[in-house]
Image 1: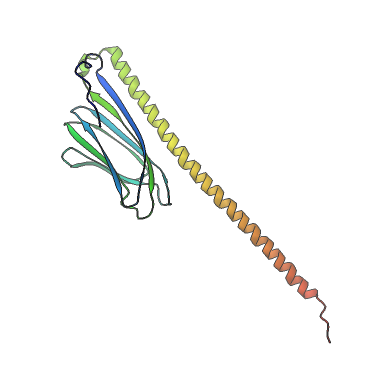
Image 2: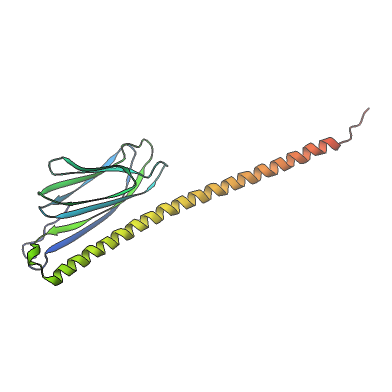
Length: 200
């Protein structure tokens, strides 16, 4: 939940940034919802990435956002990652949900970031240096989001490689056992052709 700054801060800061990072697990058939209380002209961005599934299944999730009146203003179905940005045109509680209700057996591991800016002053009164600071802050946030995305993608690819390596290893072992078993059977079968049977 966002906290409004005290009345003494507007002349020091024109924009107060916030960032929240989370990692959650969503059971099959369930959903997790969160909310942010925004004032008019506050900005919020939610980015998410499905980082894995504890019991197989696709790496996807449903995502939707509701305004303070409960009206759904954004939906995205069965996507492995996504992003949503809003500049609030009204004050109130904006709710965003991650839904795994379409899955019947796979628990999803989800990482998501919430970041934005609380509006305090008018852009017309921003000094050039302050505007540069705002631009640099926004650029830095984009870099952090990209780093978080790359960390999640690296985790997904590492899990995939380890799973593939494990399957290849056990398949090679199974092939070796089958090969030696066939060799032993062939030797035994050929020996039976050359055995001298004693006739009484």
